[in-house]
Length: 69
Image 1: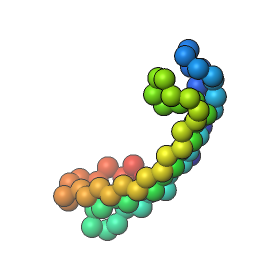
Image 2 (image 1 turned 60 degrees about the vertical axis):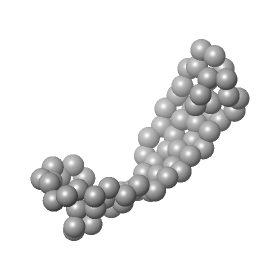
Image 3 (image 1 turned 90 degrees about the horizontal axis):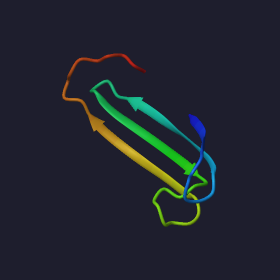
Image 4 (image 1 turned 90 degrees about the vertical axis):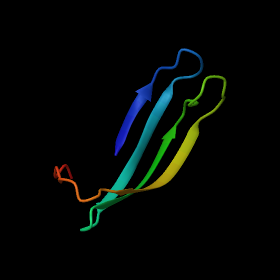
């Protein structure tokens, strides 16, 4: 999980927050499900907030595990 505050010089200021759930299978595949919301537009010229969600699959080809998680 993460959160923060954005000071935007073009539009309004606001918060950003989100989180991610991640699972690593024994075969080296990572599966991550995440979402985030910001009250500030992502691109210049847009008005309003932005909400995004995604699902990511990553396959590791049996490389070394660094045990980050």
